[in-house]
Image 1 (cartoon, rainbow over the protein chains, first blue to last red):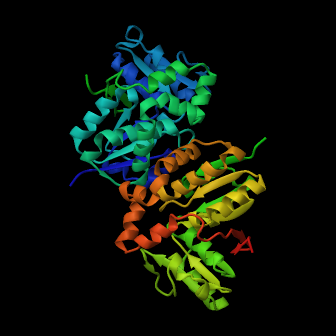
Image 2 (cartoon, helix red, strand yellow):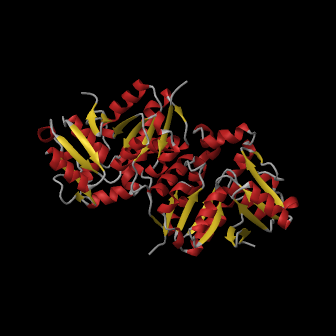
Image 3 (cartoon, rainbow over the protein chains, first blue to last red):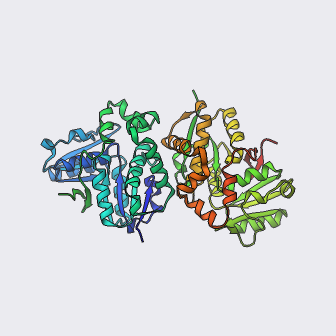
Length: 242
Length: 242
């Protein structure tokens, strides 16, 4: 019997899925999980995801490490760095610890943890092949968890979930309609994900391009530029491929 | 300024939308809202949607009217009729009152009502043109509310929301990603909705075909066979086109 594969469209629907029996893949394509994959691929020692800016500042002081996070597209007051993958080059981030706060991805990660997820990893186009390889190897139930935007379903996280479904579905039993819908959407969009985002008027696309972040979006929609496997353990994300 | 158009994928996400300022379209394609459109088109006087079987029995006795509803694909114990549009021919239903309980559609309707929706109508492929015409005429904010399946997002309600978006979008401001996703899914599926449901392995498709209800599904995916406009007022659905 194959393990099950489900896709949760929004943190507000996570209670509908059996988290305790599954690997949960946290998906926050623009830009949290893309940045996490990039920083870990570039040698970050560990990333501590926290819910709010004050915890981020507090832990940053305590550990003497890098603090990062944005609110409304700008580096949050009191933090040192932002949420762009381009800030975390090898030269800058190798062997460093980073405390990161984001709006949606961190929230979902902590929800999955508090509901007793068997394992938690994070996924994004920059590390899609590493994620798929891991999920196939583990041969365990999987929940693709879209971080969404303030609980509203979004296009980019759904597209990534659909890309995963498309790659690994023959190894799993697809249980929910939303996995099917996500794959169909991905197949429609895959020739040019960036243009699909633009044409479909994605709310987040506009939010970010208004801040001049088109380059970030293009990067976050590109496969396998940062082949790490961010694995959550003891409150920290570490690269399981190391 | 155009009014807004949003699509709510599941009752569990309804709190994210400004219901009080909008017409809410209740969508439960398989089969509640298709059956409602059909019964009203065939001359039913009114339909009283209720949450549970015991209320249905109680009101049925009190008013001496038809009781209808299914649980797990069978006529619920104590009720007279089921949930199939084919049960409600003109000969049978004209001028009659019917109390109806369904699993998902009724729940969403009552949620929208208790949150103070400006207006509530129900939509389905059999009355799609009547619904679109009404929404364009009213020129007010719209929320397309998918009844889903026990809060899990489903394909058929999303396809219908997408069909509505596709027909009326030039008159509205599309605010949420899910409206875009629904339209994209609809455009992929529209040449053969039935086959799309089958290929995409929709959970509800299998649930119903296991009960021998393929004919019902085909009917519920066909446009404009029952051009009524079910409008919720004083606890009852009536045909506003009469």
